[in-house]
Length: 80
Image (cartoon, rainbow, N blue to C red):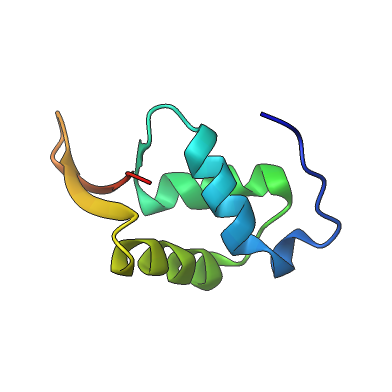
């Protein structure tokens, strides 16, 4: 995997999110976790945009809703 430098990360949330999820192990997460992880890319205060991108992944069946054990927390699994 190569490192990509994005000058204006807030304009490329979808690209950054997809690449982040692809490289992430495990690919199971909660929305709160992924919003927190996006801070490492200087994407802050963009919760609505991140959630919109996650909804696009769900709509396009690149991610699915799951129940994360052992606490039965609703989460998402990236399956692309």
